[in-house]
Length: 221
Image 1 (cartoon, rainbow, N blue to C red):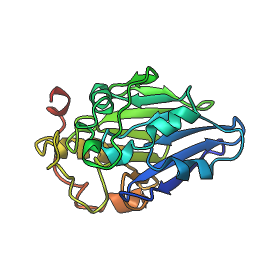
Image 2 (image 1 turned 45 degrees about the horizontal axis):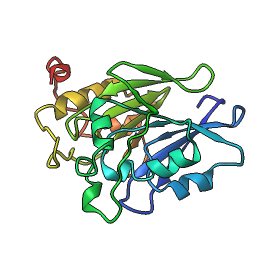
Image 3 (image 1 turned 135 degrees about the vertical axis):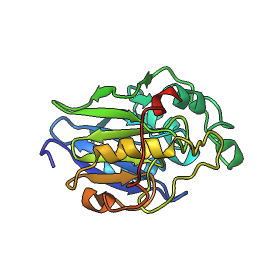
Image 4 (image 1 turned 90 degrees about the horizontal axis):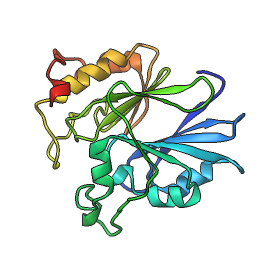
């Protein structure tokens, strides 16, 4: 793992979802992959750290529910998502939080929209590569930072991708899984939206990920 940053998994106290904290001690800066319980994130940060970026894997409630608290504390934090993600952030019904006790609605101006194959610079000489991996949800993005692959709910090891929620599309799941499969090496760390981090060598033997697919139609969907 490169010396300039470290990655830590945070399990949220509700919904069993994960978020990931990426920190650079020298710059006193941090990034997040998804945001659940903000108190859990704040407890992990040392004094005088700044969270500069929040990368959303998709807009479902269990992956965004601490977003307003985060930006209240760090108003310069960029929110990284795509056009579908922006739509979900602006609607509690779309992001499904309407059906919970604390609906989430986010409509601030610090959202940065990305596309498939975009790159987002974070720390010195570090950039996050963006891959569009819909199927579970049209806002699904997978992020790659060196050997770390953050898949959200587009790929949870050992679990068939859920497509029954609104926006799910089982016709393109296999194409998205192939995109993720092409990112994985034996040395990779797969960081899913739920469950444990696994090594690439294990993911490459996971029947959920390893299947015959083609990607020619995915980006037309």
